Image (cartoon, rainbow, N blue to C red):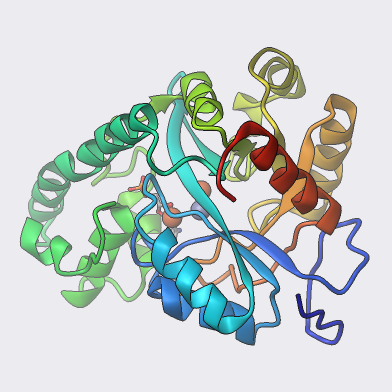
Length: 300
Ligand code: AMP
Ligand code: FE
Ligand code: FE
Ligand code: ZN
């Protein structure tokens, strides 16, 4: 691995060495804007030594990213970001090192992706009613992979000239419960943790206290997830967490024996606040994730 101590960083709280590890990124296989190869090249250029590729509800980009990583001299940790629900709330779960051939997990991810695709007609109908005529084809034209999402609808709205940027489309129309929002199928959170573990992977809650999720995931419930479901970790250092939130969540993770990770949640040009390496994961936490994957028989 190459250490680049001089590269700019907003590191995780206990970051010490020169190794830079960003464990949550997206390619255009889901809602990022870089191919897996471009993403890996950008990560190398940004001075990162390791990235986790965590596309939403799919493993499709991993093979290409792993090949590109060999050429770029960085490591790619195989991952995904699993769309789950807790009651009425949407919770994202990062799964690392899952066996990409695990039938039970693949079947459930396919269900989630069908849910993603199935709501597109209803959402374009809403937008059309709202005065922004749009077709399913317009949306498909913005997507490269099988994991469709609101970001692709947002991109279609931009392409039509209805809004100027992805985040404006979310702010005005697509946000949870917004005028053009339609719900979709997501896996129960505890079931998703079990599926990741049965696929021999490591389960880390993504940005658990970002964007109003904190009330849904208080410490007492995180304790239940840790002790009864074997949750492995929580993403502490993330652009959706402010400094106080990060400090408090780090303390919770320490009390509960959960691994603490850090990342950018990079989406290429799709999100402005998430440059590669925005936050990083402590090398010891990364080593422990890889150790657990190996001990369970998964594939980092
Ligand atoms: P979906 O997967 O269809 O539920 O859409 C959620 C995705 O939209 C998330 O994975 C984010 O990447 C993206 N997203 C949410 N809010 C915003 C925003 N304000 N600007 C850009 N992307 C967003
Ligand atoms: Fe996303
Ligand atoms: Fe997420
Ligand atoms: Zn993400």
